[in-house]
Image 1 (cartoon, one colour):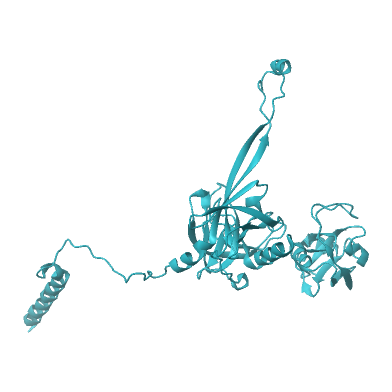
Image 2: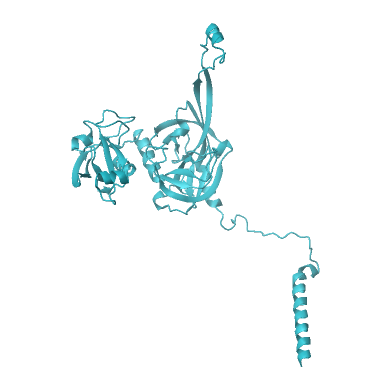
Length: 390
């Protein structure tokens, strides 16, 4: 009986092996089958592959333009005899400076079909001539409507109509991990689309602009991408690509875009008024460090901004703000640090009366300040120090 079971088990094993081998080679053994044929997948025309972003790219690329600028740059002429002061004294060293054209490139986004284009201020700063190349091959000259260096935004105008304006999205709904596309003209190679995700939100204190609230992305952004579009997976504008963090000059996966909520507000003010108007109260602020909190005998959870200087006869000085006050609220909005305080004050309208909550000698005070208009440049004549004041 044991031998019969052994024979039966061997027979089953052999049959299963033959079945496996036959199934493996059955295609080659079938009549008319070509073993050298290439296998391929054929989709219906126009059907995108899984996880393709071709529709978003096709939607946004006509709205992104290439910007070429030129300006005259004057540089001192190098001395004829740099290592021989005797010859320099004899022949003189007063050669005229050299003047040459400096060319640069960037990107821009068509925001209105009648020819308004949004870009970075540093793309067109100091330019004597601005040329815009559209995705359909047309080239035209552009003029500057206005610029806002404090957010690094500028608006251009070209004399064309019926242009493909981009669709604005909502940067307030953007979250870390969202898929994004960056569109621009890196290194002048032509219109380029790169893919990434939102790496972080609310990036500030980078020393790039006065007002910073960047979207950070790992989508490849390189020189020439500045002023281009950052869009969501549906092709809607959520940011204007502005800067990169790089030790090599190329993309290292850390790029920064200005949220469309800020860009839209600045753009509308520039188109309407030629510039941006911001609130100002004339104080210099600094963050509350653990050392400052201890010296002012504050609770460790206290949030706010320390007033380190006040402009004489400025709005805050007239309202009674003093150096050493700790500002905790601006018109009902909580203040966590000096940068947030700067943003809150800038959002106020000139001549508006706003309530400010401050801590002075561990007492809570409510002061009303008539907001002024933020000036340009550095303000001096402070009670303590000098600086660019909110």
